[in-house]
Image (cartoon, rainbow, N blue to C red; front, top):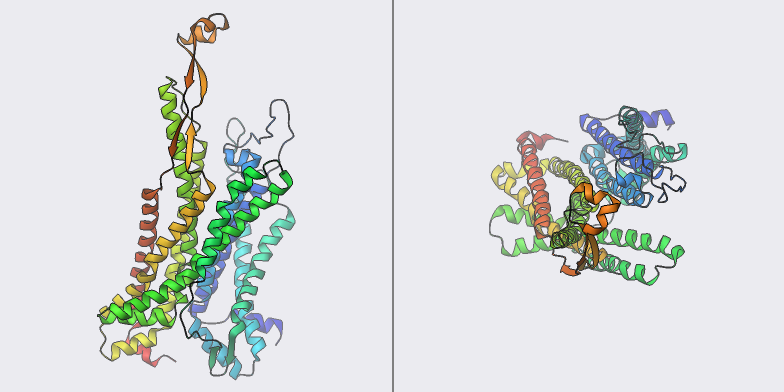
Length: 511
């Protein structure tokens, strides 16, 4: 098969196939913007040390996250974390219209295409869609960079629009993401056999998932718990600290995330067992059968949302630490008669983190909607057959709701718990404030500013040291959980709109 023919077949299909290509390209566009933003932050040059700037800050930026060299790595990492829900959305979009695509591929096999050619066709479809998205993302990045370059009167910038990543870095993102998408598609198709009769998957699960995800979660939490002892123990060894702490952080976060996502499959299966054992209504029993038949559907569906909630729980724990420290310092300042407040840098930084998490949850909600709608459309003949045999559509609607909510609630609680444990592993359980002294000038501003008269009005105040326990941020976690549950409910509502269309009796004639 010639490459031009392969490309033409990859872009052919129905409106569903076009929607899949567009959504995949949109996901690649968002991932490209997140990756290029992270590379731009890392590309900010660090100025040489001078007498006026010994800390080597880039003082032409408003935000300290960009100005301070030591904070740029964390900022870039946070931007890269936004790629996780986007890539999960791309994975959900790749499954859109899978039954119709399977029939189209089976027709190609019937026309004489080999299994290898069919596999390359699917891989090329994903790769081309992702390449279109990355190219558009690069164009949006370059145009936005010029439009947002607005220095203020002091010449400071709100965003690093004055720097550009290297050509190799730009090419790595624009070309690397389509390659990764194509390789991931090939990996998912490794157990799929395409024949003239359709597509079959080789290994079918006959038993429920094991509780092995708990080991990954425990390993991730333990990795975060040892970061502070490692920092205290090897604080003088800069070479060791340069790689050991990032490795512990990255490996621990990845292990905990994979553990929570895999654990959702275990939760789905056992929720199905509990529903089958204790439920009495037909809707719950139908949902129980679906949960036990495909427990990994919950892991695929909620992966992006759970990843965002893990980071949200960790951010809530960090905010509780900074908030407690800020409150103690303010109380000690008032006790000493000082009117100055504390530095709000850390709390304001957490506002940026919370904003990024909100964006991640919003993107994950899009993935949830795509996944649920895809599942309903894929099983529309089965739903139509149930309606034809007398099952009310209201019963099917409640079944879909049960199937989504039953694993979602415990999975959300698990993700928030793990995220909170990770965040509390990085911060101390108690904070201290005070423990020093301050000089107060009890006179007018003019007398205090005059060196000749300020000394006789100065008074030294000793600030006692106090300690306070960092509370568990239950209110913040409750808001995160409520937001995630609202996203699931919105997804169910959108899915039920498609359910009514998909249960029309005409669907029984679909081939």
